[in-house]
Length: 214
Image (cartoon, rainbow, N blue to C red; front, side, top):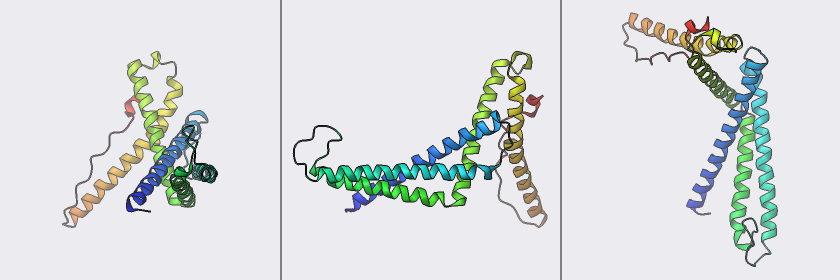
């Protein structure tokens, strides 16, 4: 295999893993939204780790199935020398590319299973999915507030969405505020010791205005 082929294989595998991670985050985000907004349960990141593992393993199984199908196509193509009758009607000249695709799918499957065994990776996927879920909640709330001009009497779903706003405030905005305050306190302690601390980022504005929760 040439250097260009190795680079291409590496890029294809990386793209496959990126797509798998995105699909996992999307599946987790939807489960989190159902769990919190529909079932009304409190968020527990550890409760979603098994879901993240299951999703990755299912995607690994799909990659293995792709590899097995490509292997069958490659073996069938080895004895075919006539002109191809369509996109997936492979011939002898396609064997090398089919072998490469087979190995790429096998590599993706191995990497996904390795990630499924990595608790830190699973927790990161859950955390990313949580952020995506609450970002979606915040956008929907903001859209609803703009439409109703923040008047509860004009919003038929106000009472139901108020619970979602409180969840977003508790799980997103307040942790951000606490983290910012800890950074400020650390800066003050360093200055008291005569050390000039590095600048900290400005606190990220909350997705919810506490005044809108009443």
